[in-house]
Image (cartoon, rainbow, N blue to C red):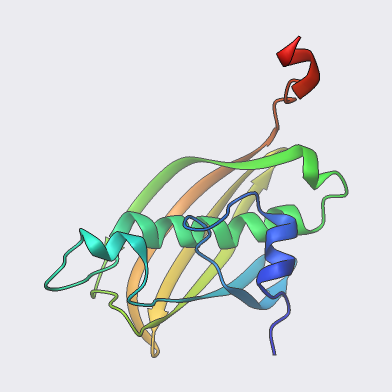
Length: 155
């Protein structure tokens, strides 16, 4: 049973299809989160990466881990509708095995250090218990830019 389903994730993260890469959150503590991405043949990136041997791009695995981290950071913030979690650094990214259609990607993120609006986190992505990717990321909580009023823009 998920702690957060896709609808609840969409209330936290600004990402939407085809770029929302976390389907559910299955574990969450103050400094740790575990998300799930079900990788299907219908993912738009498989059309070009690679048609005869579809492999999820490593940068999208890192993005999925960063989105899981974003859920952790934003979940407890009362004014999260006015905030974004921006990825500011990627370190020590390693890709161990290809992720292919049919895989269930488990995204495990843990806080290493938090300071003001910045968090450094370590992550592991696994499929069937086997490590497929690992990374350290740094993310920053930022204010969303106010959107101009649509009526004022059309005047």
